Image (cartoon, rainbow, N blue to C red; front, side, top):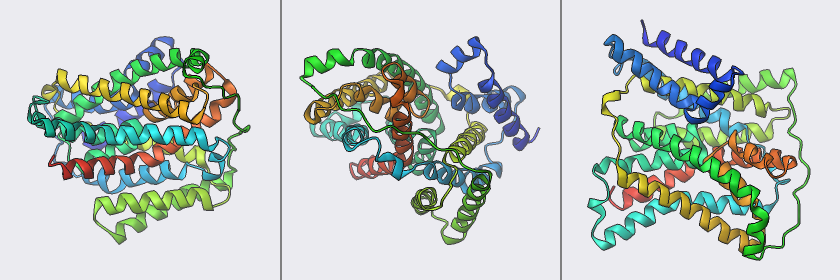
Length: 374
């Protein structure tokens, strides 16, 4: 079997399973998301058959074509004009949560270095290279996570550990945020918040058939052009992100929803290709690293509670903004629906904003960590 065939079968199988309306499968995907399954299946099949595709040319195609396509599609799905309906206070709360996710590991490492115990934090120093992909995942989702994996040169064993721990923590966090938003009125009273303002009504528009075709053609043209302008991956990421944002906000009748769906499919494709290089026997866990991740998440939530109190913003926006960061496009509106279903489109926009900004927050984290000697 060729790596292309194995990758294609994996993507089709995962998409098919993910779209089945089966309660048992729904529960499975609540704990083992499609992106993790797409990563593990090629590795398991290759290991069972004794195949080694780690040096195949498909990895070059993934880096030079599939990842750039995913970046443009995700960035072009963000409509800046629609963001105005969310309001500046929820966006500021969301941004504070993003900033803390990006800066906490830098502040933590700096404090440990000052105390002289930085080298004793984790059993494997390579875990620090897994931090930028986590920042990308918790702010930008899978696309940013993949880009930051490439930029940080995160080792495959560390990346697999990061994926597994990330999945467990995000599922746990989603459950906690469901409970948190249902108790937002209690939090309002405890924090002295008296906000009763609701965001403007918002409807997410659908694109015409012409808009769908022009979206696909424009995305393809931008990615092909980027291959001619630069062979430096970091510069391509910045250029493609800016181009995607311009496309989605300057071209009339842009298919924002279609671009987002295409981005999701491309992410599965990239993860399946990455799985061809994975060796499952290299999986390892570090208890100290897990504790570090828990402290990171909890402090993120506490900070946003403080910001909400300072802004006199309804406490329900804290779990919404947190899930827009950490959970993403699926879980943010789901958590919101447990409080006010009419706010679901606003949660979707915050999640898309997270996807659009996550790579840049992760690049900032990576730059600061390197400045500290990681």
